[in-house]
Image 1 (tube, rainbow, N blue to C red):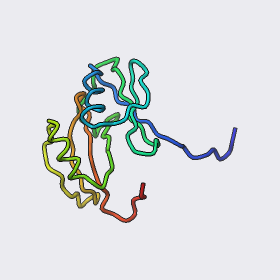
Image 2: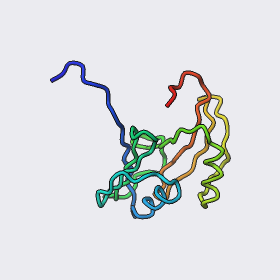
Image 3: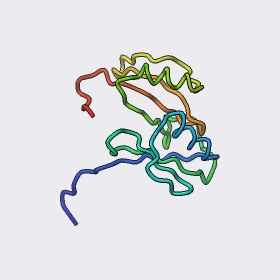
Image 4: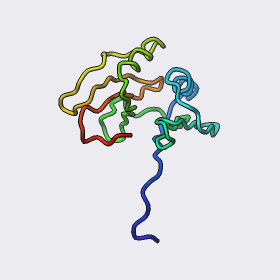
Length: 136
């Protein structure tokens, strides 16, 4: 056992959907994430350039416990980009329902907007407006 293991090299967030096919189409065709691996009941996408962050979308085995992402076990998946307005326009043009246009959160110092995927997960597109966030 190593006392000081090396840093993690990659991260994968898994979301569960039923039916999974609607979510797979959404992430592949609407968002345009590159498919890295199709495991049959789970597909893993490259969520950020450079193969460091991934999003896995798997077939659910049980119904969703809650739609509130801010409870224990809740999820908000955030895509970070400098082009928040461009993503807002692209997603709206592809028929994605976005409740509110991009706005600045003074509290967190991010420019962002939220929307949901076909399985009901809350997604966010944001740009950090703070110098202390690490550059990609």
